[in-house]
Image 1 (cartoon, rainbow, N blue to C red):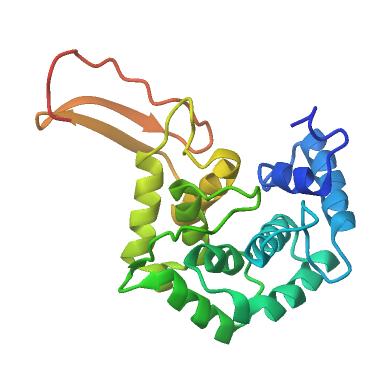
Image 2 (cartoon, rainbow, N blue to C red):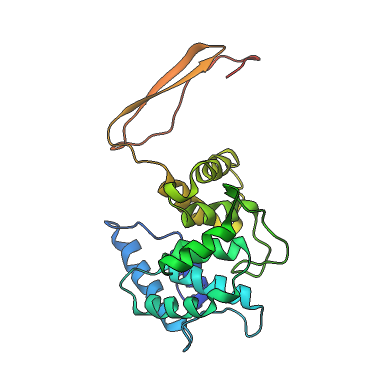
Amino acid sequence: IARLALAPSGGQAADLLLSLQQVAGHEQAEKTRKRLIRTVEDAQRADGTWSRVSNGPLQRLIVETAQAAYTLPADSRAKKRAAGALERFLPRIDDPYTAAVVLATGLVGESATETLTKLLLVDGELAKLPSGVVNTWGAPPARAEYLAWGTLALSDEQGGEARGEAVAELLQGYDAVWGFGAGPADPVALDAIASALDALAKPVDVTLKRDGKTAGTVRVDPKDPAALLMDLPTGTATW
C-alpha cells in the first residue's frame, strides 16, 4: 500500500481505501488514509460521480460512484454529493449486483432501500448474479464480490438466513493464496464478514473434534489474537 499510495489516481486511491477502513492508532496509516481521501474527493466529477474511463455503461458508473462513496467518511462533502447522484440514478438500477453496492453505501432513503432490496432478495435468497453487469474495474464481478456487497447491503433483519449463508460461503471459499476469490474486492469481503460476525468480548475456547472426540482445544483472547495451532494426529477421520 505504501508504494501504491505515493501518487495514485482517484480510482486507485479508492481501491486502497478499501483496505484502510479501520486504522485508528496507526500513525502512518492514518496519514495515508487522510491523503487518499483527499485524492478520491478531488477526483469526483461535477455531477457527483466518479469514473475511471471516459466512456462506459451507466451501470458501471453507478457502481464506481457507490464504491468510491463507500470508502469515504460520513462527514465527507463528496459523499453527500454522491448521494444526490445515486438518487438520480435509482430508476435506472435494474440488477441485484448494482443494487447491493448502492445499498451498502447507506446513502439512499427508506423508499429506495425497499425497492433495491426487492431486486437483491428473491424468495428470501440473494438473486442470481446476472450476466452483463460489471464492477468498478470493468470486469464481471466474482461471486465472492457479489456475496460481500450483498452482505453489506442487508441488515440481519432484512437478510435473515440469506445474509448468514452469504457470509458462510465467503468463509468457506477463503484460500491462503487467493484470499476470498473476489480479486481487488477482497477487502470488501473482509468488511462484510467483520460486519456480520459479532466481535469477541472475552476469551473463548475453540475445540476441534475428531470422530466425536476432542482432538484439540485452544483459547482465543481478543486482546492478544494468535493463530489457532493444534497438534493433530494424522489419518482419515470425520472432523
